[in-house]
Length: 143
Image (tube, rainbow, N blue to C red; front, side, top):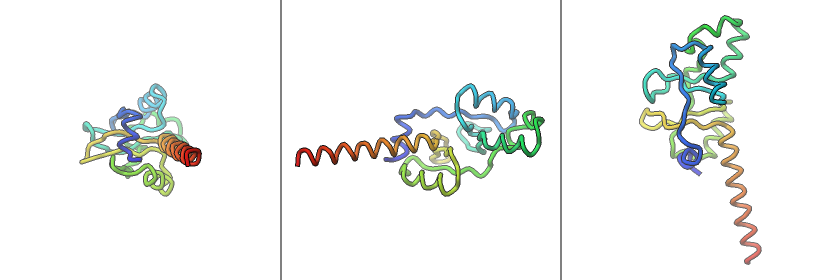
């Protein structure tokens, strides 16, 4: 399955935050939308970074509670792993595992198309395995 198919099922919604917004504002967005990461974008559709719950926890540990008043750019991960819509779910799972990331923006021609979480990848793989199982059962019963 390609990432484009996964995005069609999931939808293209991506919660973004500007680099100059406060970490407090970002925390509010994370909680309000029930997501684990925000794409940091100062210009429409351009990925400047990503801010995950993990980034915030590390910032709190390193700098204390005052970090919530710092700009998102102070905590965001600037080197973002991205994928293209034609990538396979299998390849994306490998990328996520090798680089220990849980959220990967989907980008084409420099434009943000969506975001895929590790949960999305696991669900897609489980769906693929269930389809394979059903085909095998059908083959055995009709063969």
